[in-house]
Structure formats: C-alpha cells, structure tokens
Amino acid sequence: MDIYTIYPQCGEFKKITRENFESDTKKGYPWYRKTGNHQSHYAICPSCNNPIEIVRLYPKTIDSNKPYGRHTKHSISDLAEYDRAKLSTCPLYRPITFNKNNKKHDIDNESFNIIKLLARDFYKIALFCKQLIGVDLSKNKLAQMLERYFLEQGYLYSASTTINIPWMFLYFSDSTSLYSQKITDTTLKKAIVENVPEAFISDQGYVERKDGFVMINIAFIHHRSFKKNQQAGEMLNMVVTGRTNQVIFEKEIIFDYDAYQNFLVGHDLDYQKLAISIIRQIIPGIPI
Image (cartoon, rainbow, N blue to C red):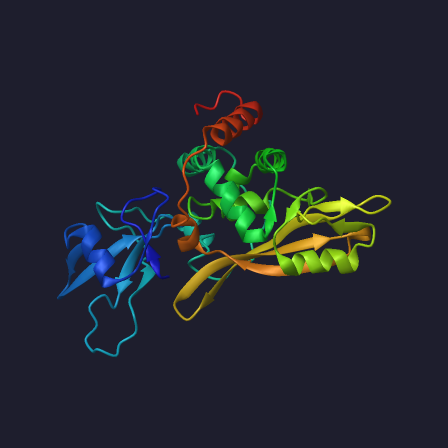
C-alpha cells in the first residue's frame, strides 16, 4: 500500500514518503524501533487499523523502488493490535470481491466513527459525489440516498472504513432516479439522449420528459479491491439504466482516497442537521 496513518481510526492518512513519515513521527517510538540488528519502521493501515511495516523507507541504493506499507500479521506494542478478522476484509491487503451481506452484528467503534463522519461531513460527501459521478443531485435526492444507506446498514458492512465513506454512501444508496436531475457529464448526457427517446436534456442540463414515462436510474455495483505491484485500492462500477433495465452507460470508479481527503469545502449546518435527523430516525437513541 502507499498510504499510512500513525493513529488508529482517525479517518486521515498520508502518502508513504520519507518526508511525510519523518515529519509525522519525528523519528520516535513507537514508529521507529530496533528489530534485531536493524531499525524497523511501523505505522497503521488506514483501512483495517492493523499494524504495517514501512518497507524501503531508507533504501540502500538510489535506484531502489519507493517505500510502501506491508501488513505485519502480528501486534506491534504501543502502536496497534493485530486483528485477523479485519485484515481478511481489508481492501489494501489483497484483491477481494466483497459480499454486500457480510456485515457486523452490532455497531462497534469503527462503525460509530463512520456514522459520526457521515453526519459531520455530509455536505462534503455530497459535493464530492456529485463531482465524481457527473450528476448534480438535488438535496432532496441526496437525503433519499442517505436514508437508503442507513436502512441498508452500510455502516455495518465489513468493508466500510473511515477512508472509503463517500463511495460506500453511493454503494448502499441502491437505485436512484435521474429524472429532473442535472447532468454535468457530457458523455452521460449523450448516452441519455441516444438511448432514452422519451427524455431530453434541457438547456440547463436537466433530464426532462419528452413524452410518456421516463425511467433513468443510477446505481453503484460490484465493490471490489485490487492490487497491482505494491499499489492496492478499491473500485466499483457506476451503471445507468433505462427502460427494461437496459444499461445505457457504465464506468469503473477507482477510489481516490487522496482526492477526497484533499477536497476542501466548508461545513453546511443545514446538511449536517439533515443527516443527523435521518440517522436519529433510523437508529433511535444513537448519541450523535
């Protein structure tokens, strides 16, 4: 993997570089420590919160490959406990096609942190997702999607983490109608115009009815992880369907954790209050 964190379940991470790691750790314990006759360097996987070793932080030759993180499969004292169950579903560990029904029985610390971040950052999540999928979803439509996410208990999904929240929001929002929504992606606009004869795109970019009943839905499917060389990550497919569930547009979406973390927007209290209201309605008594 090419990202790390030095504190568990914080929802933040950095790229693995010598400069970042030295700046974060100040080259101190428990991240720097002696192992046998050499110095080892440890951090935490931002996805599963298991300990990782930073490999090639100080290469012996100039032309060595860049540093990367590798799961240790054992606890590192004063840093992180090894959790085999969480490692088995970690998308940064090995390629997995996830089972959407594989969920925790109860809300644990990580699930609670996900819920809190969803409430606090719903405005950021909404803007990021609108840009990501090329659809300027209305506030009402986003609220419906969030409600379905919580009805589906996406926060209990074994592969939900504090760093993949926007994509899991989309994944567990099920099918969403694009009728009367504003389309910003030009390729998607073209696909709608060419394949949905009963609809048209207005001058302002909205999906409007030409005649008859308009059926255009968007969904996010096939969540899976991948690993190429030392790079690991997650992806899913965005599919748009017309009448008779015919696929008229599809694309792969690779999770860009950096893009979301660096997506800087202010907080919107209305969005935050909306999210909290939905959460409290579906999970009564939750202290949020």
